[in-house]
Image 1 (cartoon, rainbow, N blue to C red):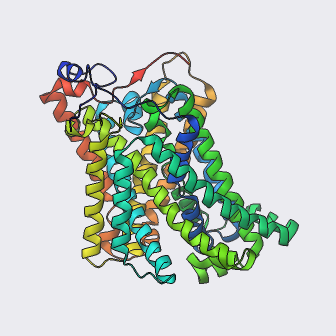
Image 2 (cartoon, one colour):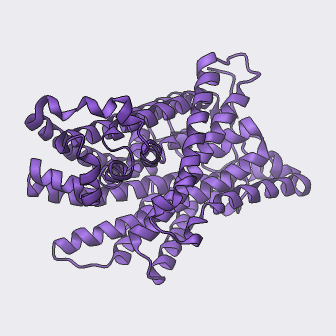
Image 3 (tube, rainbow, N blue to C red):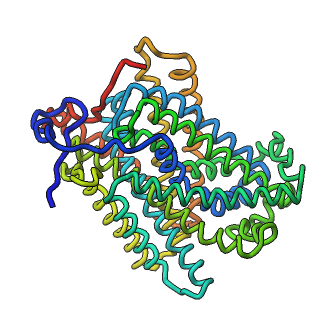
Length: 493
């Protein structure tokens, strides 16, 4: 089978441009709704509700969790305002890497690109571990005792196949899975409303004394984890039919959908449990909380469906995050920051198949190491890798907020809200969230192991390594250096 390396989207080394002159690039098959499905599916609505919301109740601010999701949504909407403004001028498949490069320069772009690869790969491995754990539980409950490494391996194999093929196929599958899980949780909220009436959405959840209780920081941390991957819309700019419209619209729609969904479902659950009992009951039941609510309001059959959809939700997150991660590998290969073979595009599927294969192998190796070490797939593999990925992604979001401020500083189309105040507010919120994540990393991972809780230093290592590598390229290979973080930049609004 033959394959080709596409040209970079802007001028770089002459050899690179010549190599891609006749090469096919990524196919423009994505509409705005398909991008939204890819992005929201990565947030895994079902697994976020079942896994993160009870923890936010238990060790966060209890009944104030719905308001905390609203607060997280406001922070990320502020981020999205600047992000969307920049996306109208910068089109590329590099996401954070390209945006940081356009605003803050090439060395920080390489640092951001390597950090993004590390963060997204960690998140993919974490979700794969979580999928294996819950699939083993669900299958065992139905008389099919299959160990988690088998389930994880199967999910990674299917993800590799989907990543090898056209991206619009992944978007269609994710659309079906996401609609199903949102429908079931929506039915649960409706059933609570029919039985509880006006008490379904208690005002106590938004009272200042409830929201701003001592656990707000921890609850905000869990809320932000539920948004991981929402910013991936920009990664699909080169595959969108109308990127200057699709990227900003998909970003806004994704943030609003995630915020409304988590806030409403968590609020209805508070109504079902009782505002005074939310923290205590969640602490006792944790991952079983929403299953028991389903038993009480929808019945055993619906709970069984919910358990299966929990697994499909995790698979959707796995596929969505895998798709985002392999776009970073593809762009870093295309611009020769990483091996150029990662930029190979499949001649028939127009997919970055080589990057997808490499990512699948790396993820399988990470999961395999944890399995051989006898680590728990959820309390060790999933929590550690997801926390690591979240640290990296929130840090990158903060860097992009700074990049937006710098990018528009001398442009005539700067705007007091879109390109100044909104990014500043986002930067403040994201910096605070990053501090909370690092301070509470041991709480998220659930372990006191010094080695596990030092893992966030990997992100610092990736960033520092990227800075050093960029400076080496600048002195040793100026042609490659000039091609870093290239994109189609326009003055059109």
